[in-house]
Image 1 (cartoon, rainbow, N blue to C red):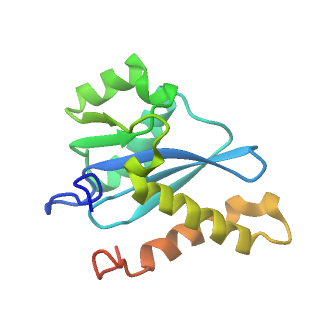
Image 2 (image 1 turned 60 degrees about the vertical axis):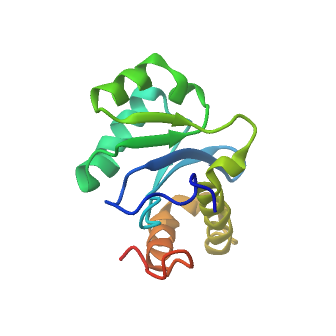
Image 3 (image 1 turned 30 degrees about the vertical axis):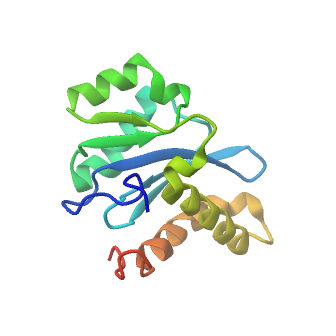
Length: 157
């Protein structure tokens, strides 16, 4: 595994990769946030791709208040992650901003894999009514976080 996929042993929830994943007819979005240390995730349903400011608010609400501020935040090169607002937010937190290589999703294989599993699980839960996907998202997050990781031999719980 590359150093990108194998974080140094230390505290959990740093670095954290962030990637919006479009799902189901491109009408909705899920912001998936993964702890590369424990493999735990948070899945945040959204109506549309968030702005840099909205992403910052979501991180404070769903991650930082529970796990603290990470030293490094990895994201794709979406406009919300390349904006001055995002850079200022991360700078104020003393969090390093890391961007994946353009058109190279393998540079964050862990989150790409989570998004594939997420889509498969949601399809199973919502086969009869895909528009109800958001009510099952907490259960998908729980299932992922209860699963024993092949990489660590542990579950995040």
